[in-house]
Length: 92
Image 1: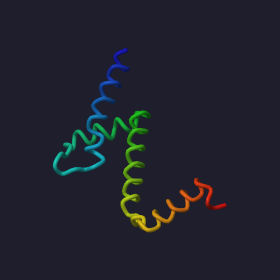
Image 2 (image 1 turned 90 degrees about the horizontal axis):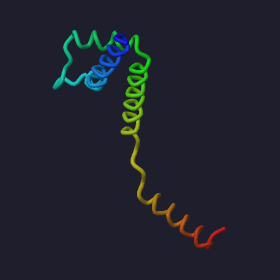
Image 3 (image 1 turned 135 degrees about the vertical axis):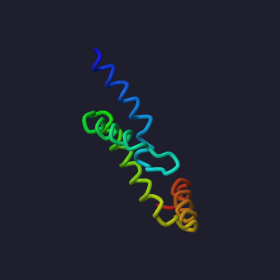
C-alpha cells in the first residue's frame, strides 16, 4: 500500500511540473534536482510517460499549425456560394 501511495504522490508532483519542464520557461525554471526527479519518474511510470508524449505531440501539432498560410477569404466566399447553390438545388 505504501508503494502505491508513494507512486500516486510522485505522479501528482510530476504532473504539476511537467509543463514547466517541457516548456523550459526561464521565468519558471525547475531546479536540477527537480529535473532529475521528474526524468527518473517518467522513465519508470507508464502513465506519466504517456502524458509527456501527448504533450509533445500537441506541441508539435500546434507548431506546425502556426506555419500554415491563411485561407484566402475569396476562396471561402466562392465555396459558400457553391454550397448554397447545391443546397438550393440550383446546381447539379
